[in-house]
Image (cartoon, rainbow, N blue to C red; front, side, top):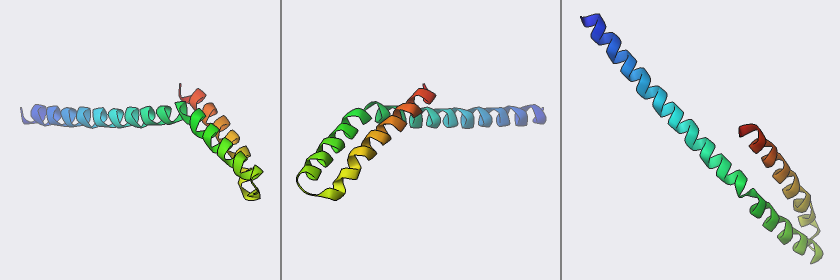
Length: 83
């Protein structure tokens, strides 16, 4: 009888831990997909501001235009893998 109760306790604990793990994984995935879905506007804003600063004479900001396009491309590739 004690082995049955002990086995039941371990299965309950295992179920709770598995549920928490799956919940955390789904939460992180949900946050990641939310960021990736909104990355278009974020990268577009960074690109436009960097381009305006580059035209205004701040030559170091020109690299952020290309970088934001590359980051957007990679985020969309990651989205394709996750979905």
